[in-house]
Image (cartoon, rainbow, N blue to C red):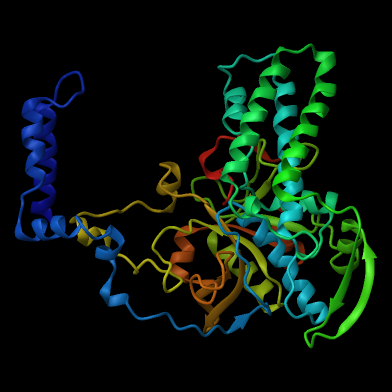
Length: 458
């Protein structure tokens, strides 16, 4: 090892001596760089294989080919798997699936889902207003201002997080999926999003050039156009509807007329804007501090995302308490890392990239966050943990990629993977220890909207 280290150090020093003094790659330096590939039989075999085979296939660890044991000591009662299809609405599916599990268990329902399309309609309308009002608020700043640039770079998207779920549902309520079914544009959002984003950017330019006294009236007219575009793509949300409840035996329980808000209040009733705590495990920032993300909200007059940063072991303890009490949780992670989508497992041993390329990847979680190598990318619903001698060995989440994806629509992650790539958890306040609740009273540290850890989950 020492000899190898000495070679690396000497090689680095030699390369520095031959480097172009202006920082470029000189001909002499390139000659030395080329020695990095020796063309050994092993190198050639890997190079040939990669001509027709994907990296993940070749990096698959044959010593970990067996499926993870699918037994879980503790699991929340759930039914059915949802499918967000070609959209970035994981945050919405995850949040609604948490509520769905509650409703199914409380009322002994069979197959039941809330309409993601209904909440998504108002999400897009509210995000359009968030952008337009943001443009009005920053009219006096130049186009080279970072906030203005960020607004026009992100006029609208279909990603998000739990604050959006809470604010939207408490403002607009919910409806069963059969009342406002999915549409093609809801399932595949990119084309709709592109057209609405273009219209919003055009409108943003008009607002920046308008007189201040005219902006609010202009914004209302602009939102009327956006509303029309959304109705054409997603359908018009119902103001009132009739719904028949059926239990798990398909027996009729009742038939009533509701508004979306009255439906939520009758069957769920929880104030989502209060009573829930957002926890983060971000070792690149100080633990025990509360952080707030500027513009990280879905509703202009709603709440920015505010969270408490805590060690991973604290998150585990709270998550276990919630699962044992049959309560699912909103959960997000860096889902693409070491993911075997065929088996539905998230396991650090799934792939051995180091052996494939003859190198190492030694960064820890803190370093990966700092260098943009990892971040929260996908939200799911945490529903199970497997405990051995009181310690977690694996976890399971209900995903929103359809029942044919992963393990029966779920993903199973090892506890080691959980440590490295789990980031966010939203839990009911009753599962949070008093010592942590006290920390929530401190003034949040405001972070900018463009912070790399806080891109919308898709």
